[in-house]
Length: 416
Length: 87
Image 1 (spheres, chains in turn cyan, yellow):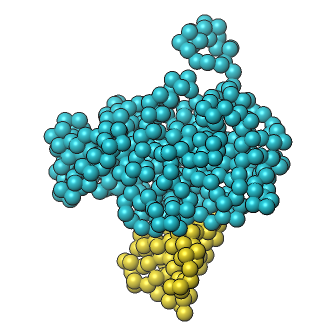
Image 2 (cartoon, one colour; image 1 turned 45 degrees about the vertical axis):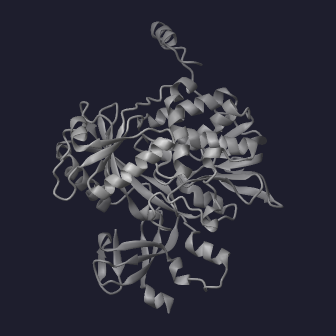
């Protein structure tokens, strides 16, 4: 079923009786070429790209709950490619390019909205760091602009420019950044994968791997054993738990990150604004809600909810940056579980177990990576070699000393 | 969340600084080899359930604590002085 203006018109005059479910609910087959564990954004994007780009269609996606019930439904929907290190930036720029064409490719309205992101500058040191970052972005073809204080003021005049502690001195802008509709991304990829023959199996929890002689043969699930030539795991915050079933320990801790939405307001904020110094960032959804967040709660947690200290911290950051936010009522907040690695960068790699592949460690930046993560993981699964932009996202980089530490903060997950 | 400091009693979580899993108490010998050091610096059990981690009572007595906690429920099961656990 394809969407088009004609189709909408036809359904409108025939009582909307022709719409069908967007994907099937098949029973698992005894064996697949590739099983993807995890029916979130990255897992579904992987399945979609396997089928659409690499011609592998005997694929199953196993999801323990319902599609998009994890972090893909719990994030703040920001897409950007403003990283510093070459090992990251080329990957995120590939992702940005895939975002720009996502709706045409999946024929699904993901509401990709490139309204720009501004990282605020408060000190000379920060300006130097952002100038360097902007240059790194331009080297990777991502584009960047260094804004003066007046240019920032012209775009977002409602900010408090003369905060005593963090006066705004400028900003680094990526105009191609923006937001997308997170659920639309899930549904678009799920539908695209299903249309090409991928089995999406919900309410099917993986409880173990069947591994013999160092090779994976399949997975044990709550719906019985399913064989597979290859198994790819993309389970975000549950990475350590799932990979422990294969006897692996990972270089990560799981942490809770909270996000917040206000009541719906008229268009107020043109793009995304980040106030790193005050641990606060904000954008506005198409529905009108202010979507904002801040730091991790800061301690190892699997509870999908946070605690009051960070809520207060985020609210204080918001008030310091844009005092008018104090007039908006907070509608709801929630927490998601981040797979925080020891260097703050992700992992897309084979494991020491033949046929078992791992995609995870996205920290709090997994959403923007969804298209390229799936494409590159599919590349690895289909061709057994990494895509060139993920060459440095290896599992053994910690042992070998080739860390991808954007912030230079060392092996402490809650600081990244 | 409150953490019960053995020296100060139950205190707000905001008084404490989190340092990660309590592996720091099992520092390998300098010549233990690369695998042992990689595991010590980078690899974590990261369980969804009971875990032991290190907290520093920064805005209190300054003691390092080993806190036994449930990562799924945020329940705190026990707190001990790291100095006593390590000795």
